[in-house]
Amino acid sequence: MAILCVLLFASGAFAGIKNMAIVVTAGSKLTDVPLADLAKLCKGVQKTWPDGKSFTLVIKDPVSPDMHVAMQKLFGAERGEEKGLIAKLNESRLTVKIVDTDEELLRTVEATPGAVGIIDVYSINSSVKVLRVDGKLPFDLGYALKGN
Image (cartoon, rainbow, N blue to C red):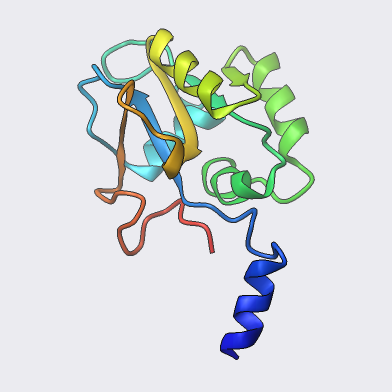
C-alpha cells in the first residue's frame, strides 16, 4: 500500500490537490469569516462586507483542480460549471477577478479594498493575512477548503 501511494505521488496523481487559504490585505481588521457568510458574498447574495466595503473575489483559473473544493464549497459548483458560474456572477455585477499567477493574486488583494483571494497556502507572503473560516486555519482539522 505504501509503495502504491509513493508511486501515485511520484506520478503526479496528487499534484493538483493543495491546501487553499482565504486571504485579505494584511491591514484588514477581519480575522474570521463563517463559511456561510463567505458563500453568500461569493454568490452575490450579499454584496458588501459588514463594514460597507465592496466584496471582490480574486482567484486563479476556477476550473483548475486545486480550486475544485473552493468552487464547490463557496458556489455549489460541480465540475464543468465553474466558468459559466463566474461569467453569470460578473454579469450580475459581482466582481470576480481571475488572475494568472499567485503573485498577481497577492498584488490584487493587497491593492483592492474589500478583496478576498483564494490561494495555495505555500504562496502566502506578508502582504496578506489568512482569514479563519469557521474559526479554523488551513492546516486545522476540519478546515472547510482543505483538499482531499
